[in-house]
Length: 166
Image (cartoon, rainbow, N blue to C red; front, side):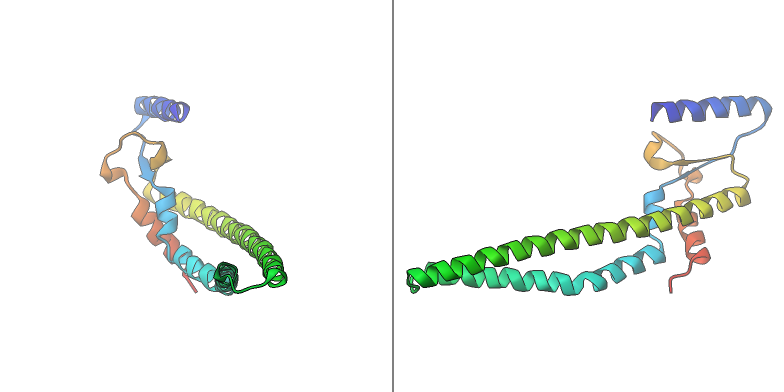
């Protein structure tokens, strides 16, 4: 972070000798998350993975039912062994479902974020060209800036315009 700040200050100092450097600040993460595209992608992910989440809830309920049966004291030894084995199978199934779901959700999110991140970079570059900006810095790497340098909302609006949600 200190190297980036030093580079920005050095560039600004060099530019100040020749011409005024125009700088803007963006919170890239906020700009991305506020886009209609990302909001729709979140809803699509929830809908896509809901059946598997429902399946997990169902297996968890079955495990609770097995636990209740085991605690009831109404089972003989053979029944207890059978129910215990069934519970162990369902527990393995649940772990498998959870891991697969987690992996698939993570892969889908990564793909969405990479696509949207690339698009946002294009939008910010175009916005910088239109505004005649020399440097655009992410606010997460900036200690202080005046609010007038902030272009996050403009970037979100430009993204929504360039990539309308379908």
